[in-house]
Length: 120
Image (cartoon, rainbow, N blue to C red; front, side):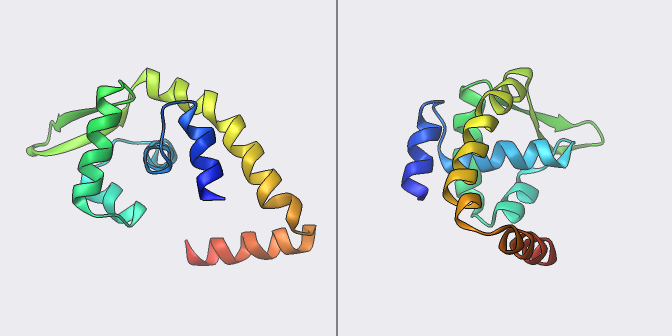
């Protein structure tokens, strides 16, 4: 299933890791430091650095110095990053519905939702 999702995301020049990072930034509603993204996505700092480099080259994110602490870097979505999320979201949502949602009863979907909310 992950391979199929990667194929869908590849049409937008995204990997699953890049997509998750963009969604994490969008969900936070604020700029984040790389270590927060690393913790949120449960990946190493080296992986976050590679993801950030590729997304920055693509123009989807930007890194700026924190105005309150110039030793910290803040990562934020660019307008292009917001547009990319809007374009990809329907494809991602359809994939999840077809491969997860349609395989569960409504009761099972609610159970899954409750369990995920409990974990996160």
